[in-house]
Length: 115
Length: 114
Image 1 (cartoon, each protein chain N blue to C red):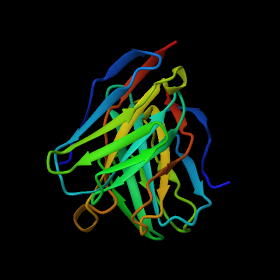
Image 2: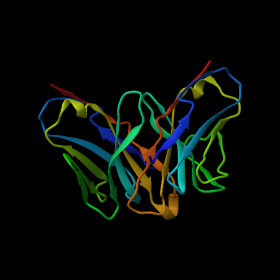
Image 3: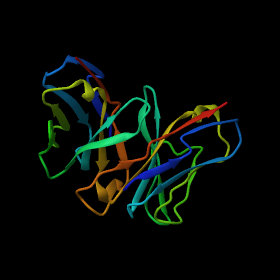
């Protein structure tokens, strides 16, 4: 059974700091890995998607990497801003042929960026 | 606007009274899925559908039913709700056949069963 862990559970940083959020998974047979942002009481907004054949994806101040062999992904946020405060979740979609359609989410890292 | 629409956003109901939470997407996506989110337990998959008339269980399907009679709609049915189904529910869709796309989520339905 796939398990996804995100560390730390919470993180507080001063504005302007670069930071890294971690996501680890136990089964490397994945289809893709996706990072989401969730604001309190709201839905999930997709940030970045990395296919199993890719090593990283970038969007603005965000960079996500994927190392399937070690079962790890990182989300790098450059020059953090108070507006980045939210919970960040990673989700692993399982390999299409054996567990097509199933996905597993981490519990998230709650980020607070202080002005 | 491309989106996933869930209704209602908030619902309070009593134990045993059947209810349906609707989910509709306008992106012609093949794949749709339901999740529940609970404090300390994260997001857990309830049911998913790879296409019309094709549905399968996720990790926590007990007490729920789904149907996929049309591509755009994927309702979640609670035949006899119980208090342990009080949760925040999300519907998501994806063009599963496209390898470079991920999930689009609805805004959520907060359900309280008393």
